[in-house]
Image (cartoon, rainbow, N blue to C red):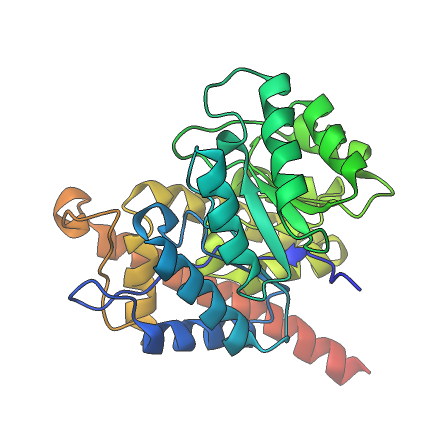
Length: 317
């Protein structure tokens, strides 16, 4: 049976050693951190993982390591889909499938790289559906790099009707679009999961089956509480939502290195090395550590308030 891909799904960062190799010891600690915060699934080998800067061999090894370390505790989805050439796409997606991932994720801009529209999208999609393992569940990801290629309603419906797709990482950043897509996917195996923090709460309340934005690398547990319990504690949920939206704006300050700085503070990672960002983020973004201080303080304050609510409920029982 295909596992449901929904809930809070961190887009995993890739730790590197100072000499630029994948830091598997750090990755093991990072996976443990995600799982300790009760995430619902993991998205490996995605843009946050710097997949465009990994070799095909590294993409396969990275995805396989995540699957093995998770050991079935939560579903793992994986991409590594970075090519425009159709034969290369088949190769790299087959490598992703061979990692043992619960679903292999197709990047929408590579399904229509020349921006020709639905006919081209369908040709590429049909070819991949024919050449990839028929029993492999698939996902879709409107990855912003090299350009954001949003699905039309007709394209999304085409994928839903194929019966092969189980999740869309929605990057429309638009609540009416999310609502329309939720309606289109109703009754199908397709989960629409929003990736934009600014609309995260409203999208989940409108039927988006979770959240998969970059700040799942900072406080995935807070998004999970908001999804499952926010409507029971409206005042706290509103204040938390404001904090989460504002915190997520700091993505512009050198992410994914920003997330690596955060995890270096936690002791999860030893290095903030990145292949996609090679400049000194502290030099470019003044007071970056002060911004992180506020994110850390806010995160811990809301965790304490939520824990107090739980302790009060337990005492009352």
